[in-house]
Length: 507
Image (cartoon, rainbow, N blue to C red):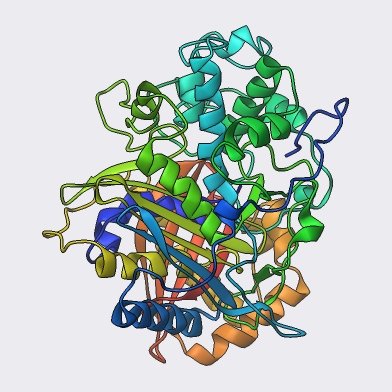
């Protein structure tokens, strides 16, 4: 769901990569029965952990990269998988799936994959199009005429984040509403019932609302609960039996998700309540299962050639600009190499999935701490080990939100200085963010930031628009030598909806 921190990497992705630049509910309505539990994993997805197909040297390098970044970030665990030459050659888990009492992570354990689930929803809609039951050029009004500008928003706008519907879940922390059960139809009516953030097709802004609505349309057109349609028509044909649905099967997760306030010790994090996942972040699976899915993209084995072409073609905005986003996947040409990528985040977990179709390669990293860069960093550092060396990286395009984010940097420096003393001016924050900064949060921020020394500088790394707000990633340099990474959401009136110290900058 969330994904703001992970998705925002798209704005600076060509700069962030040293060698490869790749970026960013309810299962049924209340009146419909939940689908039956998933069957045990089929042999195709029961991949034994190991390093078959990788040299001992490369496997050792992958392990060293992962262990180093886990140690630096403090993220408890990572499950790593690699496809090379069109087959799964590596699946290993590192660290602790649960810190107390200690439970070592294993490659056979499922992790939530967050917004990587979106490409599964897009595939479901493409299958219905192949069957002649809908068309991506259909207006939303054909299915939900009561929504804002429904006659102007097309289904393809939903799957490419170009609808103008406001994101219902941009935050990287758990807001009060997510602690209570939700319902997809209510979410859509609230957030797709607001005025549009922009005219359809004119801008790209990441919005989970789009995919909740897309899943509701799949459900309405297919005539069966979305989770059941997805399981029977997408997951099982891809060889993915045993994938967990987080609305009904959270209790089957063996891995605990974690969070932290600033640089304080980690603490268990709660997944969002049932009803806040629906087509946008429903799924949990092992690294091997996600690699199995990546192989369906590489082999083009589920959809027609036309379907894959549509899925993997980036949407061009009305002014001719490339959005670099297809149907549920990021699409980029990096140093002549085509890359399909998506990140995912739900409460306590961040995932990264990168597919290199022409190289017949893929990298999956699943981690169990929210608002962390570790999954993406691990994947980026593994990529040069399994792919041919590229040429020099291109520069990232400027973000239209950058000026707003840069103007906020001096105020952010003052806010951080206050947090070192355990103080904030609550007038600067929204109700959600004031709820986040309770006494425990302020105590952890003070105890972990005050030893770092005075602030020397705060600089803006990247920014983008999302959910009607400006999202920025910052670097704060302290006199003691530490550089911290901070993410911020600013409302149009300047109030702070999110301010998270998400970790230390990599060396």
